[in-house]
Amino acid sequence: MIRRNQSTCRSLVWRNAPSAFSEENSWSTETGLGLYEVLGLNKKATDTEIRRAYRRLALEYHPDRNKEVDAARKFRRVQYAQKVLLDPHKRQIYDKFGRRGLKLADRVGEKNVPFVLYMDTIWGRCLAAIL
Image (tube, rainbow, N blue to C red):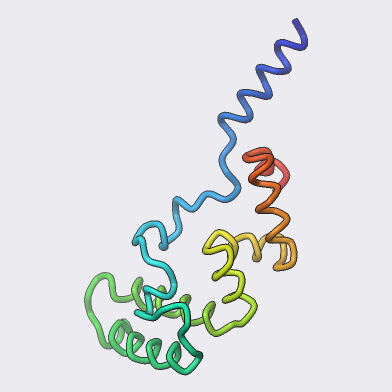
């Protein structure tokens, strides 16, 4: 009987545990756009092209110039995309693992991202309790 209760508890924890890697609140899933799409670029874009696209969009969406309700939010998206894509380490993580990889890099360090993602595929939501 004790074993049954323990396994029931484990299964309840497993089913009800929030994912440590949930992207429900991220803007990329909200809009369906990746960082390259935000800037209107492809993955082969150079740093110069990223800077040009950022400047063009920053002027367009800057809250002081654009009085639309969403302008500030769009401006922050453009800033974030430029910040990530101009940093060689963050860009490499984003290209390989996507937005999820960036979130993990902030939490567990850049070098640990592949390991944590591998463990997540094996153990799933059990890592939520650890992280």
